[in-house]
Length: 538
Image 1 (cartoon, one colour):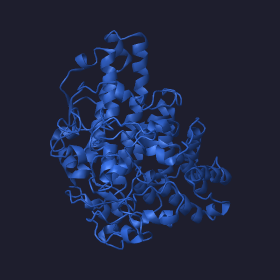
Image 2 (cartoon, rainbow, N blue to C red):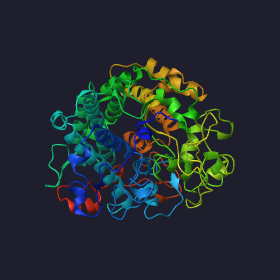
Image 3 (cartoon, rainbow, N blue to C red):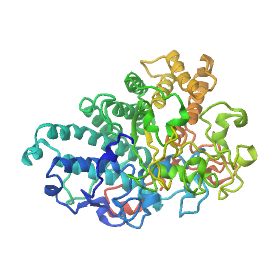
Image 4 (spheres, rainbow, N blue to C red):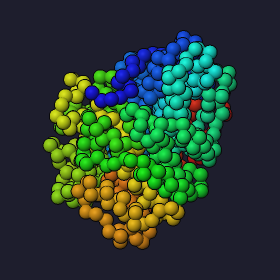
């Protein structure tokens, strides 16, 4: 069995937090059904709440896949308040990497780049990080030295709780980064805010960037040293990785480039003792905890213990149809595929040796006639992706014998991303790195994939090199929640510089309003909290 904190701790309803999406409570603070005095009376209580905090990234409530959701208010628990699934919809569906056949409410508006402030899916992804942050704030309020002393929690137990405060602060910073990237601003609350007595304020994109940066730097020495904490928890490597990602996108987030800083923190991760797992294809299988030396942080998923319809269970079901056995599940959902824009990154698929070209061939094939999308609602059209598989590389049985729920862990930060951040930041003029090392890092990735190594000419001139790095990011990181952010950084998401099938709702692709580089703050949140402002154009 995987050595996971979530698997070892009962995810009990220690703190039942109620956050409704339509009531004013959403922009106040969730209310606890159990008092802090009861919940945090023992060290075990603290550990269970910490497990719940981590669990908010993989599960949606306290009753398995459905029935007791963390967030209600008319939202679907499986599709609209699940962290991984909604992050995927926001980061992948608006791009060349994904289209969806379903007609669930407004889901097609994502690829069409025409969402509005009333979109129910956006309502969910705005609510989820704020719910997570609220839970974290409560934990931090109750984990002070004074509180522990008051409850007679001492010795090793007290030390462990004190160390966990840095983990909680990292997870809060990560949730705020999601808000920064998607919405460009956020409802803002910390443990310093009084509970339920006032409406929260809002932080702008620039101010939120500074807050996230300062939090990550503040906890850097408090987190466990790299690769010394149990798998599934965060350490210094996760903080460095998030800082590297934050700095790579600083020009977009704040208007000021920080490529030197991106290089600095990418180098910290690269020098931290991580290594590429030998086989790329096994990095996304049911026992991918074996690839933990490649991960700075992975969200743990288990077919028995973290049952949800919005973690990696979504990946293995949504991409499969009649070929569901290939994905290790009992049935397909006939939903998501990629476009020709993704397949073009791998050139001639029929003869490609790049192991990252993980596309279903059992039923749907990779012929150009099948990749072309004449009808988005027809699942047979498009590039069928089987990157995630609920199948163990060692041939063993998965946790869920019915194969309804996935064991695949979701890698939030992987070493290849750090290599690519280093390379891009060097080409964009950051100091502290060099093109020769950048080339070496890219070729480590390509060599593992069985792809032809780059030569120095592939990184020159700069414009050509940057395009090749973007393409390499597409090949290496597709369906991992990066593409929208990457295309925005390159000025390609909304412009006519790069068109892909059905961009903007047109078969051949079309440019759209630049306002779609950022999502609107949901109308219901602004109605509930007049402190929140709307993004331009919505």
